[in-house]
Length: 491
Image (cartoon, rainbow, N blue to C red; front, side):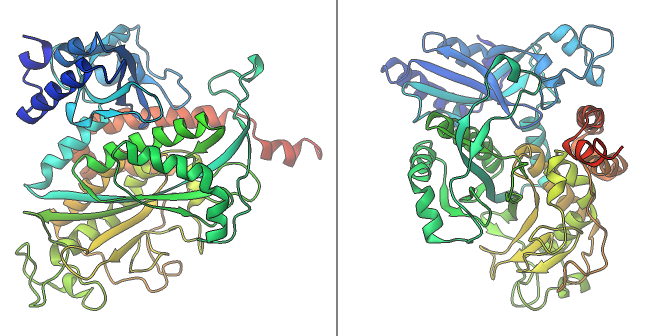
């Protein structure tokens, strides 16, 4: 009896899927398998095992250093690992001891761009079999369990930049933590939103990306050329539970790998430091379902399909998209916790450069009916289409933390019957709580939000804020280009 069976870590469906993977391996379809997990930043880490080792991985999992959970985005370790003090006081992390990556057989893919290569997404367990509380996929699963039997459905629109790679900057002088960024060139001039001509300029590389994304089985809906130079948007079909987050970590990694293999550089950084380049966002569409039916829409008789009594808050949206009292309270939770959840939806210093007035990006916690200037845009005309589009996110967000924080905020709104107030017809002029202007401000808001911390786990919030504050401390010690320009010549 192996580790996975001994600790009862798979469902019957996962066990059946694992048998299918073994059969595919025996058929000679693959030679290696990448076994990965999404770290605290939503970046994929892991190992590549031979097909001969795969049966052992599907029985025992595979070990990986717990020090990966102690690193910031540059790869620097920010927690002590060789002293009595460990992250969250967890003795299992001392000395960079091993964790176990337990593959989820339902996530298996063959990578179209790497012949003979399989791919498996994993959850993290301690060697005792207990779940690792810092595993962000596990955290989202925990919040999903708080939904009282309802299904959380999400869909994404994600923007990114796609450049021609001029110089990968891999010389000895370019190395470091982080290393020197690659030198790139634009693929189009931009500033022609959704232009067919601009799309055609990018079509050769976009066609390669499309075929590989579809080859992975990801539910691609559209590929669009955005307003900025070399800026692209992808949308995926909605998915339930972990589905959108799992798709996003794979999508991001796939786009970067495929682009690099064809002489391009893709970046999900929000606002690259390049002339004329625009900010990129990640808009998250959200709804809740009971038995496959959406419960955000208000029925014609004025009652909610969820059974909430019609209240004044439900009447706030009597015209335009009509939210049920459940949907209205969920919206109220998104707004109430907007400042705190921005630490998860916008977890980089760079991402806050996007929050500015009159920019098609939000700058305050307001909602509107089909209004792209509002933080939350209410859309749809019936149970199957009514949803909340939160426009607060950046493409570099950890998908599991983004979704978990949104769901936790919405569920708190429902629990408290929170009223979101009236729709904002002028979202950049409406008096409302401003969104944080910096990552530090967002972390302070998160640390002060005890209700959100209770749903996400206070220890995890403390861990996450510690890592992000270490990033801020490194940034504060750097001399920037702005400082050089501003002071070097005149003083």
